Image 1: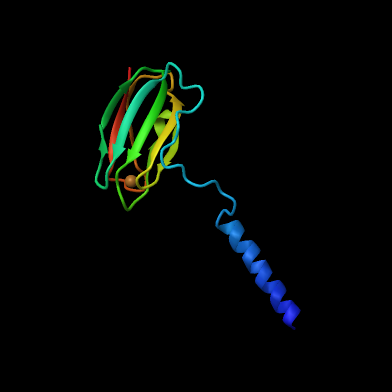
Image 2: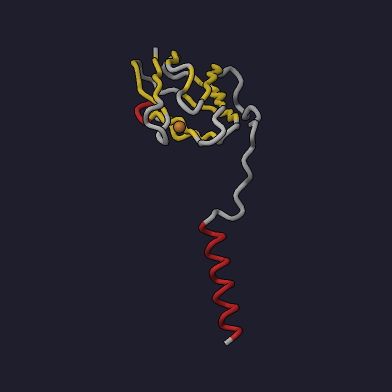
Length: 128
Ligand SMILES: [Cu+2]
């Protein structure tokens, strides 16, 4: 009886550590510049609890971009997503600064982007 109880507890512990992403790397609060950033256009963005600044960024079609995104919000995660331009989620924790490379698609125009966690926080990319 006692052994069965112990097995159940061990199974619960094993399952909960999988569910919580056990073994995940800790958050790097000030990410270093990634390899391959040479020649990239640096685009600095800052999330606050209410907005992202600047809210309009011009880049060249096909250009390599190094995003430096700071989250000055003490409470919430923010993310940058640009579905129309193939910009996959860049998640920024409270107080964190991330540095990520991205290559703009070879098309021109104005494309919406922003935080999907806070849909009121919007910005635009102008691809030229
Ligand atoms: Cu947000």
